[in-house]
Image 1 (spheres, rainbow, N blue to C red):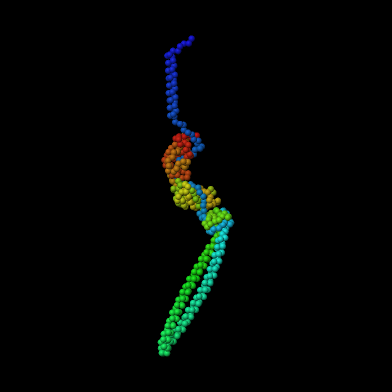
Image 2 (tube, rainbow, N blue to C red):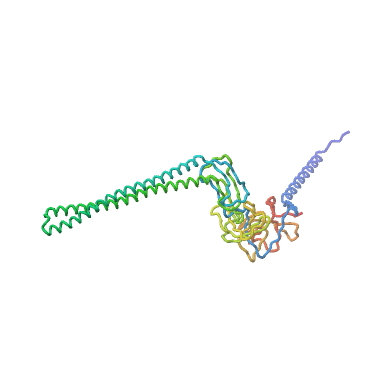
Length: 418
């Protein structure tokens, strides 16, 4: 027979369940709050992948680095001086040449015919000059003969006047006859003077005509010389000693005056053209010492020229080579160059990190004393070079820092090294 459950027992049971549930909720809240206030565990970094450097104090060399090529100081571009068609290419790049070496043969039948026509025109003009000279000499002799006749008549008239004056003094010759003799003598004297002037004018006329013809001949001679030189220039010569670096002419190509056909360089006189980033070029000056690495030797040099403006983010810096060229040095050889900016005697410095620029403030991980953990510190950088950077604030000599890329740890101030 079942016994009835008392109401007081039921109320007590419900109370115990409520209390236990409340205590459970409180416990869960406390645990959740505690967990939320716990700091996340420091991430780990493999020591083998981290590049760790020690901060040093002492002299630091500031320099900049750039890549470039060796180029010839003396470059002669061979251009076509006349129009023509490329018949033959006789020399190929890499061949040593001298001033008389024929590189390319061109053809231009019209130019050759024009030279022949000009030569015949010159011969005709020279013949015309000789004919003119003979004709002028003949005319001058005719004029001289006329002048001589007048002179003889004048001399006779003068003698007759002298005789008539003597007869007139004796009263034998009438005064009228004497006057007629005087008039005739004066007339012949005037005619003789005119003939003399005509001879002078003819002489100047002859000189002018001969000078005009000579000018015509000289013009044709100069034109013929030009045509002949143009014909000779159809055989394009190097014009200098060196090595043929480039040949752009192709057989069958039609060229016009000024078309570049080839390029000759002198391989004994080279310089380096370095490409320097525009962020590093501000301290470069003419005359600074440089080192050019040809991968077969290092050549000392100095900065000789710098572009006034950047092109595609870089400046071209010319370095004159002061030492002997190593074996294998040739134009267009790829080289590495280092330009010495200045030497700092006593500074705190470190190997250049993978991040951060000169004169900036960055954050770096400095190893703690135990060497197993690292803490992020703020570091102020100063002047920099290719491989080192000056430390102005945040680090001291002897500190060890991670200079490799730690961008994946930017969200943490502490890391562990495994």
